[in-house]
Amino acid sequence: DQPANVAIWDVSTKSLLKRFQQHSWPVFSWGTDDNLCLRITSNALLVLEGDFSVETKPIGKIPVQPVKGKEVIGEIRLNTLIVLQPSDKDEKGSIQLFSKNDLTAPSNVFSLQTLDGGEILWSPDNLNAIVITRIDTDKLNQSYYGIRGVILVDCRRHKMRSIKLPEGSSPHDIAWSPNGKEFLIVHGRMPRNGATIFTSSGNPLFEFSTAPRNIVSWAPNGRTIALGGSGSLNGEFVFWDRDHLDNPLKANGRMGGFTMKCSTYSWSPCSRYFLCAVLSPRMQVGNCATIWNTEGTQILKIELDQLLEAAWIPYNPKIYKDIPFTPKYQTAKQVGEKPMLFVPKHRSTEAAKSLQRNSGNDVVRKVTPSTIKKEVGIPGATVVSEKPVKEKKPKEKSQKVKEEEIQEANRKLRALSKKLREIERLMEMPAKDLTESQLEKIGKKASVEEEMQKLNEMFLDGK
Image (tube, rainbow, N blue to C red; front, side):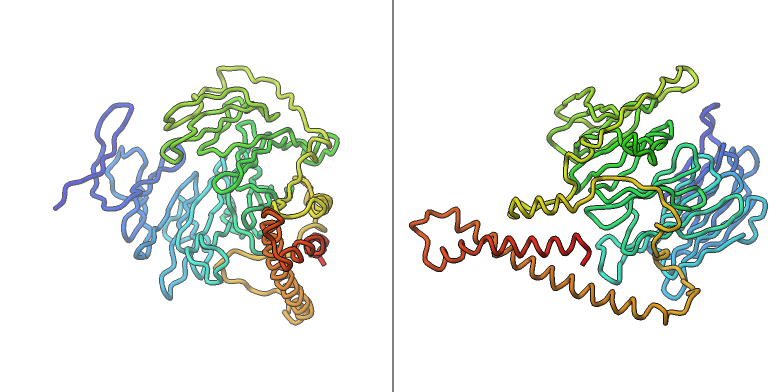
């Protein structure tokens, strides 16, 4: 027999409680206040007393189906245990809810045709949870990274519902408000993504317009929200005041922002400052840590040859008095200063102005029943149609015609862009070296730009 390779220690007494033999990780998952513990084995989830003060005989055993190359996930908070069972060939995947008081059978099951993995995000009060489902392969080839879905779990009523996002959208980041009453999802197709605030029951409250973002971070006070972009995006962060998102007199809560591509970011414990850092080994040059206020002003910058980690020192909020929050909001002029729509270098000044006129700024609006659009359900879930599909046929036909028109316009734009690049290349050459046909091409520059402008305006007007 192989020796036990996992040990459980009591930190307060520095004593060894128990040893186990395990070949995979993670091994244990503790619940609220460490009162219960899950031990994850190859074919079961064992529910144990969290402090191991009694014999380690399980107080509950939940059978699971092992799937090669996939991980069974189980977590427990308060009275609710959530289990993610991956799918396998002809077997569907599922999200199962168990009550701590009855571990013999699940109280609710949400079945999915395909489930390769997932992640559980508990609300700060542990009364709700978000399950991010994962399908590794997109059969429609629309996403290289697979498909993500969002399911909301009500732990008190043991109910589950899918959070519907606009068609074609994928969740990029999700965060609970520190008060546990709301959560925000950044969703869409890269590079420009929208963001929506939902209530803890899953109803949309506010929608942010699309922008180059894939990050959300709530401040500890639950009032300030940072929306930003990192990775392949330009690193622009914008700060919003949650209390004034529906107040146009205060710029709808928009306070300020800055641009910086960073490896890590976090709020200060007082919620007044935002830390961004460029770390090694992800970035070997330009390692630094910067601190910003919510107006977008840089307070501090520390540059180092090699920076491995940057974080705030934890503190007990009961020790220090709260600092009054007096945010400053951007004016309408400041909000509209920078166009949010990307304009390629080769486009004319007139075309760029046209795009800027038709583009919207980074704004937020309150969601009402009249603004809620038809959306799609969770990927892989079994969907039951409530209305006859016959009523949708004319709409589907017109939608298909529209998609064909857009594809044709895209082809024309690509061809015109190629022509314009060739013309600009010729214009950089000495005039004496140009042939008559090349000079003729240069003479057509204005007409090419005009045609591109018309196509762009057609897209922006939704024609």
